[in-house]
Image (tube, rainbow, N blue to C red; front, side):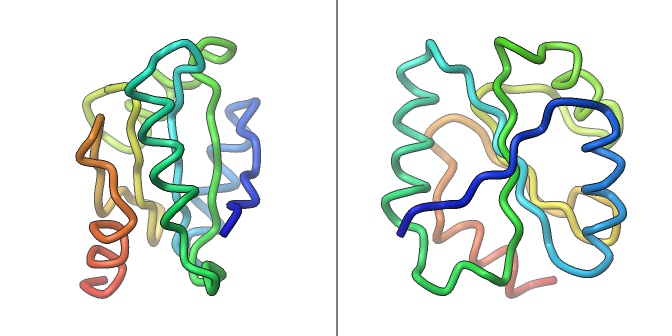
Length: 115
């Protein structure tokens, strides 16, 4: 099932995600467009995404185009910057993060059920 990514292009988008996550869990995917591992992680997310993916709002950051935002995300959500990386945001905080080939839909779904 295709993921309808919402692009992150400014720090205001991060603040919106923090606020929005009070209503619905938000996923941030930090993607390096020139990295093979990042491409694999993105493909796996998109390929395994459930048809009923509406329980989470997916956001996408192009790391190469918005390096400063990647650092801002790490600082805001108090996580170590990695690439590729997913962060699950709920109630304004990061409740789950994974990087590289540890990024899987199954793990994200498990994290959602424990919230």
